Amino acid sequence: MTLTEIIDSFKSKLNVSKLVDSLERKASFYEESENGADENGSVGDLKYNPYFNSGNSDANNSNGGKISQNKDEPLIKLINVWKIYQMGEVEFAALKGINLEIYEGEFLIILGPSGSGKSTMMNLLGCLDMPSKGTVCLNSKDISELDESELAIIRGKMIGFIFQSFNLLPTLNTEENVLLPMEFQEEDRKIAREKASYLLDIVGLSNKKGNLPSQLSGGQRQRVAIARSLAVNPPIILADEPTGNLDSKTGDYILDFLDGLHQRDGKTIIIVTHDVELLRYATRVVYIRDGEIEKIETRPKNEPDMKNERGTKNEENRS
Ligand SMILES: Nc1ncnc2c1ncn2[C@@H]1O[C@H](COP(=O)(O)OP(=O)(O)OP(=O)(O)O)[C@@H](O)[C@H]1O
Image 1 (cartoon, rainbow, N blue to C red):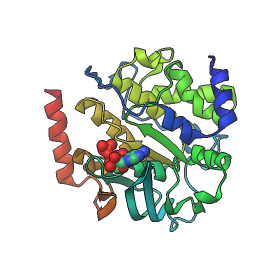
Image 2 (image 1 turned 90 degrees about the horizontal axis):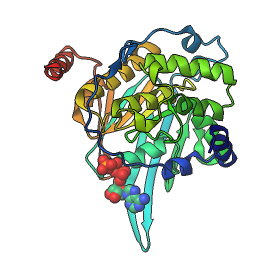
Image 3 (image 1 turned 90 degrees about the vertical axis):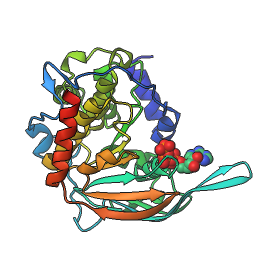
């Protein structure tokens, strides 16, 4: 199947939730370790690009990936949200009355043990699934009032997804995987290729444009996934265990990269994870257990002792 045929078939459905559901959610474990950066670029060493950041280009988000709404309004709001899975006669409540507001510019971590409801929450925050009860608002719009194609469009513009299993299309090469969301947004082909080229440059994969996912390491695949998530310059990056399948050194690169997007570009980052190591990046932590919010903690970003903790860890990794 050619790229055009794949895109056409996706467009005809415009139902990304089904697409995502059907994509592989469980990644194979990559034992290989890699440096996290290629010779022609290092992850985390972001160059400022006015094309993406100035807001006066013809990028899809004409405000340069920022939101023009009232800053006092949450970007995403969950009001008494329940998710109940039906298994034959049996019902299971994976989320029980969640209330949460997420604001522009946060680095929010949703932390909980296995089975606590993190992925279920991520699917609702990303509008990939609908709640059984309660309301989810994206940019002040109740998503239940949008039809599937309206939802796919607003989701496509607002949210970049990073999954632990990368969710790259196996038959598309690196560049084509990054181009895919821009094709959905009907981006001009030439501009789209320029953006893909820029994004692959900043994630250090300019020399891997023609490689299929199977010809990349785990860390490289995750970097392709990050480049793809940034393709339409979304204001929100939503990541499900973004380092779950990476060695700790590559994981640190990926997190530093996301941290740069947060600190430098003001992007709103939301990560769901069970890994307490990631908390040092957060401005707010939501602890969930058994489908309920246990507590919410606001954290000073990059406290000195946290930096030391990170420095020590990186030193250990280098040795
Ligand atoms: N489609 C489904 N049908 C029935 N039960 C489900 C379904 N999806 C999830 N669950 C249940 O809902 C609960 C929350 O699942 P979820 O995947 O959100 O947890 P999680 O915190 O992401 O777990 P993990 O960290 O192990 O991925 C679990 O008990 C799980 O068994």
